[in-house]
Length: 234
Image 1 (cartoon, rainbow, N blue to C red):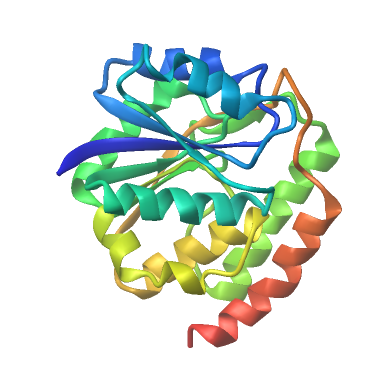
Image 2: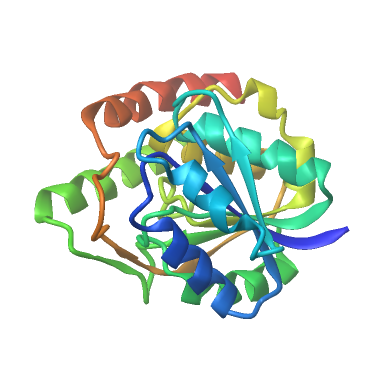
């Protein structure tokens, strides 16, 4: 079995990806990296290919088209399982998620099955957001928490570490959500299957390069699909 894998889904992240890969490796945590690229028009996938030979811990999965964050992660999870990884990370490719926290995740995963990097517990937070963006995020987490009867504070965050056994247990082909709802659905199903979940504090940074993927469609998907998920998993 391999130890840990960081999955980085990319779509037009050419400005960030090389620097981020180097910073992850600089943590000296013996983690491999899988870039899941959705055929980025800006050449992100080719850029990663160009320096793969110099970095043995780096791998890339090329996908034909952009299908959303959830589909990219599912593809990455299946690759991780097929290649024998034990601790499997979700991490944004735009520096919103800081590599310095990876060691905290690895420590926390020793006594639980899923670690969530939380903006909304003591020690966590956000930087660079306006009041409206933060309100929408906090409300979305609170809304999902109430509808689904969960006790965790950051259900929409995408900085996570899964143990292998969660991804083996959950039917990944039956995960339909994308965006924020993907994060909610995966956490909810982990909890309902009896796995131990823990939140640790992180500070989320608004991206400095490129364009945010945040949009109204993602918000509405989460609002509607929380109810669908509630009745599906009873």
